[in-house]
Image (cartoon, rainbow, N blue to C red; front, side):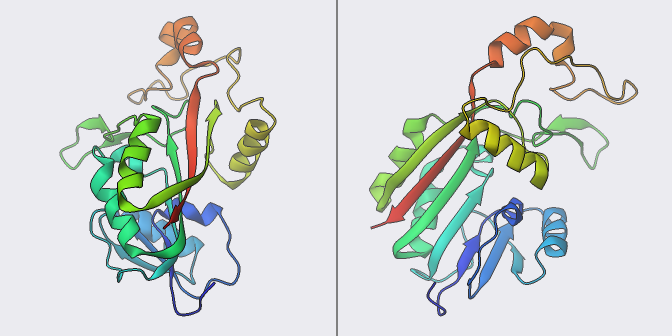
Length: 220
């Protein structure tokens, strides 16, 4: 790592990945609550509220940008990839992990209560594989690796390791024969807890389907 250039973590969930020898680690999120959680987990990093479309980082100043489970909340990938390319130095890497539709078995798309007391889901868009390429190639981001993973969820570090191991072995992390039930009938159900109402159809629809895509881009 160049000691004069920062490595950027774009999403606080990046604490799941450990990097040694990083001179400067900066993390951004649009949610102050998420940043508070991240500060407690990575005390040595610098955190700030920021939007993916306008990062408070100089041009060509980062060796690494890591965007974890965030682009699924962006409708148009083009402006975001242009901004990520702007902050990367030539030869720098952009590592992206993103969900393919809803992340089965995980609370990463929770049913949340708003300030008005009403419940709703966090906005989510499923991007086709070609959308990432259409956004990356025009701004000088060349793909060096891409892989989709079928099934599973990663709700914490240990669960993430188990999911990664299962995905690498080809087994995936989602068992379509596992029983499901409501965890708390007194609360509004989330999308995962609704599956028992149409269990066979729900599991048949998701079994073996890719739920995670990982990219490694190099800034040309």
